[in-house]
Amino acid sequence: MKNLILTALFISVSMLLACQPKVEAPIERQTFVVENAWVRAMPPGRRMTAAYGELKNVGTVELRVNKFSSPQFSSVSLHETILDSSGMSHMQEIHELILQPGEIVILEPGGKHLMLMGMRDNKTETSSAAVIIKFEFEDPVSVEFSLRNL
Ligand SMILES: [Cu+2]
Image (cartoon, rainbow, N blue to C red; front, side, top):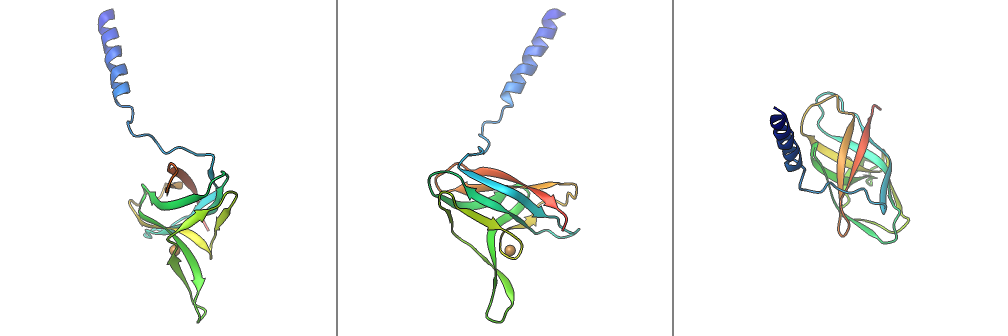
């Protein structure tokens, strides 16, 4: 009986070890931080929203942001709200974002923002959106944007 329990224990421990993820999770790096990260809560039925915060390069080398993604949205892009000559505001994509050491880029309503499009499911109980920020030379960083009702 004791042997049986030990065997069962051994099998469950081996299974636990076998289930360890092989892919390394994105590492929070000290060279890059996002402060006041928040995402606008979506009214029911809407599948897109915007995320804001302060992107800071707290390292000593320039950071080139390559692309954004999210497990919860089919596309994430960096946008800027601009006024055209007739005073109409519209959004355009920013294709290149480079942060010099010490530089802060502020994402705020009416300015730069992360556009989250194509929400994958309609879970209304979600309290945050995860955005993975990929850099040209650095490891990717995963940032949680907490939901705000505004
Ligand atoms: Cu936008």
